[in-house]
Image (cartoon, rainbow, N blue to C red; front, side, top):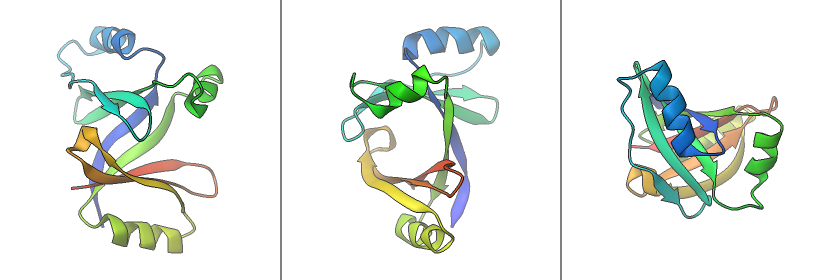
Length: 130
């Protein structure tokens, strides 16, 4: 079962520039360390904005398909949801028509399992096992 929303994923060309921009919007926002997610070949960090987080996702590979999304001005592209049963939630969502893109361990979540899934409208979610 999904416990709550953890973050909204936002594609960026530069994490450092995005932090500066969001600090103008919300000067008291806290910024996490920057993590390199080896399996996804991205750099990420979290910016606390009120009661949620924005995850800045910067492609680290020049051949990443995420670069194409940035070039098409697709910025906000997924919602991160916490769950204590990632396999059960994947199974439930697949029965509801979601498709699993990948399952991996994330350095940003202490090596916990994460999974990206999308629905028929190509809306993407990230499940994060807690």
